[in-house]
Image (cartoon, rainbow, N blue to C red; front, top):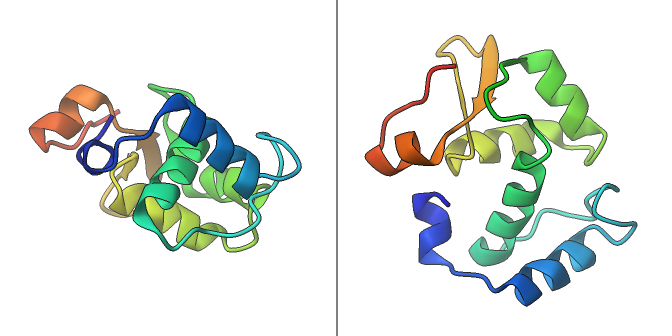
Length: 112
């Protein structure tokens, strides 16, 4: 859980209902739209972040392809994953990875 998620606690039931609402074709299906409300957006971003493998480094192209399969505006999703600290990237954008909870809690980037 990152610092943003701590501000908006979510029960398992809420999470399940929101995943069902924003991924109407199933949890592995496409995202219907990016929620405007922070709590809902965080649930959606956590769900998408969980599809990436911890400890693995991804090229920008790999991240784009994975996100494009879920939503047309993959660039906004990628930017949100970075902004909300679910993922981190090299300064030049060449590689991306999931942030670890420990690094996020310390406010440090996790270098993969």
